Amino acid sequence: MKKLAIAVAALAVMTSTFADEVITRGAAVPKDAKAVSLTTVLQDPAAYTKEPVVVEGVIAASCTRQGCWMQLAPADGAQGDSQQSVRVTFKDYGFFIPLQAKGMKARAEGVAVVKTLSKEEADHLTGEGAKLKRNDDGTAQEVSFVANGVELTK
Figure: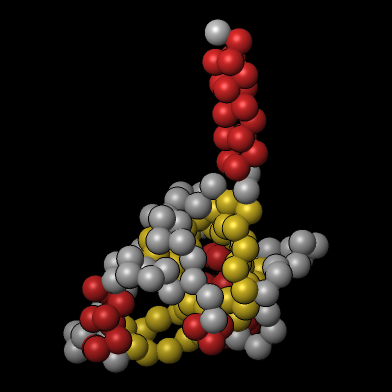
């Protein structure tokens, strides 16, 4: 019985320790940087294309094949539609996130990018689980975010 109590106590300590574990990828995200809300970035994405900023949110979806992008939604409950969230890619395809990252909290540093995706690019991303607002010709206008580094927590 004593061994069982010790095992249960050890498991409780490990669970609480790993529950707040921070998973980092890429460059370190500055701890003292004040985050810019996703809503603010989406209202004027061109203002955030030159200098890196930090954004925070919840991962509403991610690449289901290799973790090469994540759809970041505001932490207040937006469900990852392309009007309220931003697809985050990783600078120079230099790192990936875990495939099971959906639902994790994320903090990312990088810049906004505004571009038109070709029909083929949009088809590819949709096939990986991305939610895009498509134009009649199959292309998609997208505001994305290229991250230098990310921090993920459960």
